[in-house]
Amino acid sequence: MTDTPPVTDIPYDSLKPKLSGQRILLIGGAGFIGHNLALGLSAMGAEVAIADNLMVNSLIENSFESKRDLVQRQAYQHFLLSRFELLREAGVRLINCDARHLADLGRVFEDVRPTKVVHLAAIASAVDAKKEPGLTFDLQLITLRNALELVRPRIDAINQVMFLSSSTVYGDFEGDTVDETTFPRPEGIYANAKFMGERLVRTYRTQYGVGTTVIRPSALYGERCISRRVSQAFVENALTGKPLLLEGGGDGRLDFTYIEDLVQGMVRALALHDAPEKSSTYNITFGNARTIAELAAIVKDVVPGAILEERPRAMDKPIRGTLSIERASRELGFKPDWPLETGYRRYCEWYVDAWERAKRQLERN
Ligand SMILES: NC(=O)c1ccc[n+]([C@@H]2O[C@H](COP(=O)([O-])OP(=O)(O)OC[C@H]3O[C@@H](n4cnc5c(N)ncnc54)[C@H](O)[C@@H]3O)[C@@H](O)[C@H]2O)c1
Image (cartoon, rainbow, N blue to C red):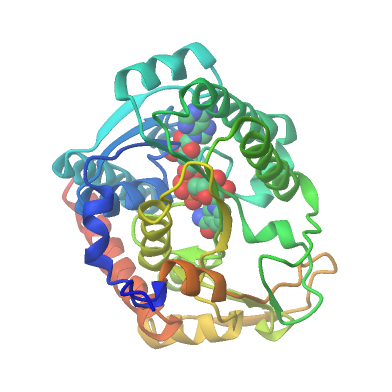
């Protein structure tokens, strides 16, 4: 008998002592996941610094993207600026650095002296990545190579490298559910670069003793995201009178995950990584795939004027489903709090408010 509670019962707040005193460097951390993670970690007492070159989904892109209409541009600018404000208020440092350049990233390592490193830099969309395979390779893998090469001589000080992979490494699902033991069958440049990244990270563990954690998230949604995945595109289309397209009647399934649940899981995986030689891979999702039609129904409830339009299913549509979170629940005590009915509804209501505010601001100017 031991008096240690089962990991599934670990209360979130009890992780604070494990994170206080940790200096955590987020590479590509000014983006959607990164800034939310930075806020979550800083609330748990960690010292957080971000290295980001503000290259993807950035203020510059938002200002010069010619297809963006005025309200959209205004709203996204507000999302991006409020990321910075929240980070500054939380005491998170944001260092402008292109992680493709080893010497520049090296200076950040010297300055921050991290004890943990999280790698998030990427073109974080399979569709965008397909248009620029060379850039995809560089942003995902050259930056990762540099991070690992800087960690390698510092393993006495850096106890963990966390790599943000993706559910796309599983490729088309053969059944309803996959878990971390399912053999990956990635397709396309984005998923293959993620899979290569995972292999590279694990190689640095087996060959050089770097402590590693691989996280596989899926279909995220949440405040201040500007990536226009289906969860954002639907609510925005509803607000601008454009149809919500339901391919194949909207029967495609995705394991939609609210950003707060992902942050909870990542914080747990960072806090509970207690041995430098440890290596783990976790699905961090809601753990229950839902249909696109169910997503659209929530939008319609929040924005009753939303137009739902059925379309034939595209031939090359990926087949997805549920990512089992059993391992993360067992080993990390991870328990998501936000099913679509509450998490996505909350996000849609936030979006409607933000959109209205952007419109009012434009009218004033
Ligand atoms: N959002 C999702 O649904 C999702 C799902 C699965 C996996 N992921 C992965 O999680 C990670 C973060 O995704 P996100 O949604 O926050 O994306 P994001 O585009 O919002 O953030 C990525 C950040 O990386 C930065 N970056 C890119 N190249 C860089 C470089 N050379 N040097 C420094 N910074 C650089 C960008 O400027 C951006 O701030 C990515 O690796 C993505 O592939 C995201």
